[in-house]
Image (cartoon, rainbow, N blue to C red):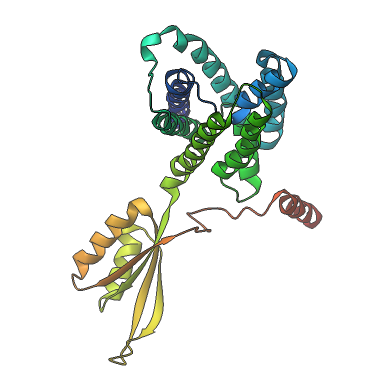
Length: 304
């Protein structure tokens, strides 16, 4: 048990370290050398400096400290410790990586730079978030909102970055071209984070039409360990009654399920469709908002 716990913690910090490195290299190797901007807390602090003269070195830690306190209260101590680790590591990497100019990639095609930078940034942040950590700033806001409301982290990034990047219009030295490229990075990052975080949670709905439905259903439950629902059906042409099997599985389990069905009945007709969301045991929790959570806790207290 202790070994399993140690391996879990080790993998958490290993992947957060790798994610932090990828995230920092997206900035120091691609975005910053090519003069591109983006959203996030760093972007907000930079715009504050442009407008008021207050340095990023002062506003960045103050805002992060406030968000860390909120993160502790909302998400627990484990989140806070991991976030402090990632913030410290990324701060160190942002200081060390620029000392290696050979890592900088200068490109004439800024659109391509924006896509590459956004892709690397989303992969890095995604790995950190998957293990319960954060680089601070809007990451903490995204995780707090996602805990209580069914809003994806990518959407939170999209809305906050939309506001932050729009503030570039009030900075004298920035023009429309800078704004456009910043939006390209923002959109690429938003969709990339959702792909990293939600890609392994995608589900499929499988309908099986077979005369051997009972054998297939028993095999799915006992060997493949997937739930099965049998739906009463009637073939309209033959007017014969039968049963259609409904199976919900993760996308990565689809090939295994289909292959097992075909092994039992090569003539089976199988329909596979993507399920946008699946809520219930073994899948996702229904997030009904902070107010509903408080109401449930109150009702539990009254019952006691």
